[in-house]
Image 1 (cartoon, protein in one colour):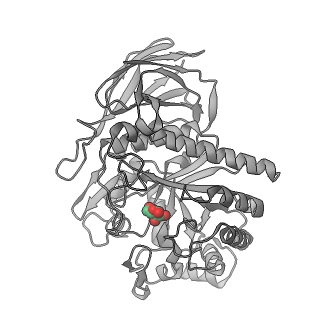
Image 2 (spheres, rainbow, N blue to C red):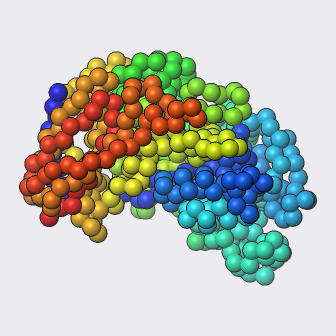
Length: 493
Ligand code: AHR
């Protein structure tokens, strides 16, 4: 099996915004409590933050972190989570049917973000909350005038404003499962009114509209109403999706490896359709500014739904699908300016904890690979070679490829996923008007078979290996193992 990959570093797709490596932490199951926050644990620092989790997250270089939900935010009262801990309110939590102790809230999350080196991105309650509560939260966080809310923040020990730049208005408002579900008309009106008071409170913020999560519903109409009614107040349109390898209504493949590997077509289809939709609506409504997309919840999620914990154990095929997302985001780098994997710890997450330790799930490794090696510019790759029958998505190329250039260091990274379950693929990489400067490195994420999992008993089934790859000139040969994710990294002359 062989494939030719052609790359011309002058043929660019667009700037890769670092925010595509974003994360998402929700008050759900053991994401916050027992995940990032476990006061009293020997693994936690004096603020209760799990240092092992923090160090693992640093490897993923997440530059932005969405919080506090998710469905949770549609019933959240931010005031419950600030101030002296002994006065914090425990509430019934209706999104996930749990009790919320509120011992972790706004300021604990900001402290966590500062330790991690990530930028907070808050979602406000547009479910059972109102716009006064939303703008009060913004003023509490970002205010600089001598107001009672700013004094309140200062009394909680935070003199300097948090300067939270990114704010989402609501979460998955198109879903009937949401507290305070909204029709297309209701949300467009709600969005505009929230946005007005929020931007009047702090004009420097960027606002995110909850555009689509239920792809079988009226997502075109929702986009249309939002962009007709609130174009000046929308900085991002947020898309959500989850994929899987089960036959249920949220999965697209039915325990079928080839069909699951064909899922890439679903992401491409959605990204292409939605970027075309925004483009058309901008033209139609004479909207001059760009309105990028954020995929601010995405991941593999299909095994656990109702336990209120969502503790997926991922395998190698899931890791390949996570990698395919990054290839798709790079191919749409012009319009995808943020993406947040849902979520970061325990809840459908790359990191899984117990009170005694932690395991890095299979999906951790492709995320790390892309975050560590991607450059700032996506390249327009052409590749041609072996194909496979993916079933529902037809005949597809066995390799899924993207490439990036680091324009400061002139380093090329080629990301190659071999979607064959049993066959290696030989790759012939040809550069146009460019040549490598010496040998490169090949990084490979792989494991013994596509069902391999990393668990506490077998923590290293799937991981990353690396080796030198000899190269000179403009033609490079590389071999891609079955069911592997690869990064080929070269300095260009
Ligand atoms: O990430 C888990 C849940 O998935 C989120 O709370 C919700 O927004 C989505 O349905």
